[in-house]
Length: 424
Image (tube, rainbow, N blue to C red; front, top):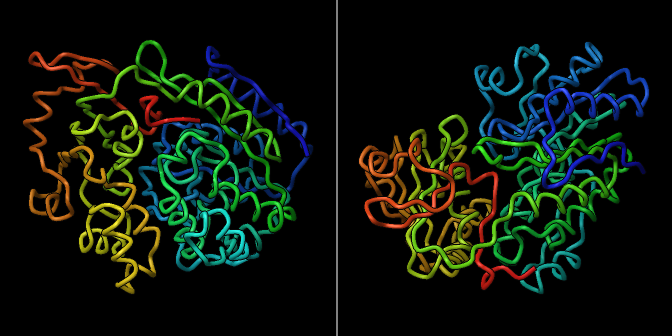
């Protein structure tokens, strides 16, 4: 078990040339490989540097990079334009689409007793370890799992074996892992590398992934002083140490502790990344621990046009709405459609304020009736964009018409909390 590269701290800025050199250093230590699979994230992690890293892998191996499998999880497949935007001029015929409902094989099972223990007795089902069959049938002698370690609502800190077991995972595995996180409590998980969902994935990885030649290439990306992005760390290895080192740095780089709870926050969602509330509710997840009781969260979402990333989940969100934990648990108990799609149920819990603060969605392509129908408040996007013009706001506190607001330009890059709601 090896850590091939460990570079970074809270003040580091890794340039493009350094990023490439560090990757090539690690690949050189691995020795020659004849058939490589890259598993990067999709367009929803545009700022992860994974697109560049995957392109560097192609430049290093050439035809030896046999396939690229974006870790879509439940997300929609990337378009040709999105592939070019993220990965540059790579041969698109090498990209495969992961279908979480059909393209998987179950390679093992985490016993129900372990899930029961990790859920503090709330759940009593086993957990199937599932991966895209390409990983098993592609005759690869190297699988590069590429991505960003950052606070995450389901797994505490994103990436590592989640990229494989969830990103290329199947319906039951994704459903049950998401539901475990929701039942255990999002605010007990976010920003923590060790938590029940991660322990389940570690259990599965230690027992069912060891025969696969997986090496993890992980970045830590933060906000630069000029408002742009800065890569603060790169960690490459084939065991937990590279993830643990990256998670430790991410907590320093991506976590912002507030002196006082926020009364009003405004979050804008990059139209290149966010097209659904399924993804855009990061604005809710990442700010909820910073928001005061009775606070207002305004989400500016010019490209959001749907609730779910596929038709089934979109229909479930429209049917049951973001009504809070008790209502969602009751709906799961009494409705077979929601009970069979537990990741949707988990998302409904995650996206609710539990009545503690208001959430005003200002989408470019959803009507007032649609937004209010799922339990959110609705705001007129053009009016709100004029009042809270992202081009004129700086990250953090701003005064608009005499009112203090906290502005966030990219919720996917951070986690914000007040100490009363975050105790590590």
